[in-house]
Image (cartoon, rainbow, N blue to C red):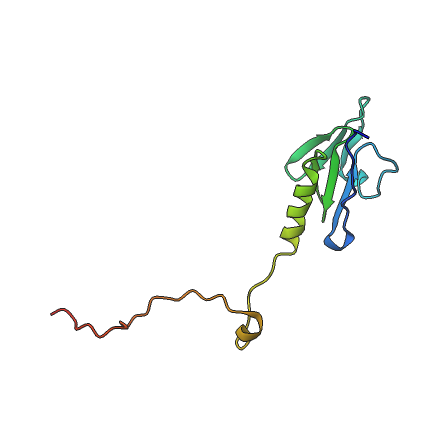
Length: 122
């Protein structure tokens, strides 16, 4: 088998849905992003946040929280992984008394008072 394989990467938990253009049936989330019908050559025009984009047969359409992207099969796994990482960014804000439990990210500040016993210049 020498053809390119497509592995669905949809993850309902992360809100990411994918579909390879040309596969049937069409998912229910796709028509709301269409800017028109399917062209004679099979291309699909989608409305995105940055304008319109053409999805050729075999391209992967990615949707997350109402935003749509189109990528080639080769680009899709890395793009979806970046979306997933951005959606699950770790919040490092911790309250008082929690540093011992969760770790402490501390950058020492410059103290106003000197720490050595050097006499002042007169």
